[in-house]
Length: 126
Image 1 (spheres, rainbow, N blue to C red):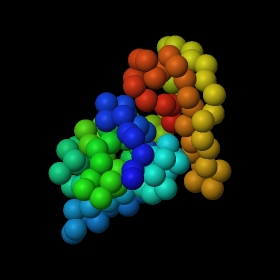
Image 2: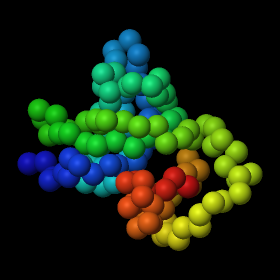
Image 3: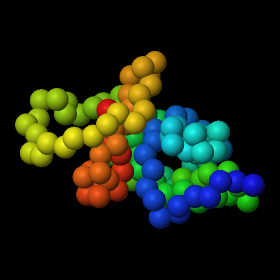
Image 4: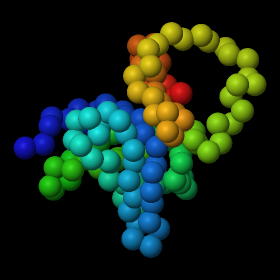
């Protein structure tokens, strides 16, 4: 049986693939991978703002008929390809957290921080 999932919680992941012809794709999310052993299914009906491969998104999860995780209510956070020159901006707020996951091969990861979790509902992209 599939693991229990909090359908209110927002997860963070990166759109890994998307087949426009079929209208389906997958989101890489370490937290979901740990729980389910698979990537998150993304259906075209959830893509509202031209989100594309490489975009970092936050999303809720709904389980499909076969218990597979499906992304719902997706919101773009940023892009792995274009970090928007964030290092040149003066920080308005300093947060402290702990590296939760880092993929050296892909060059990104996530930081767990109680303050940003409370404020934004997701982990911080690194």
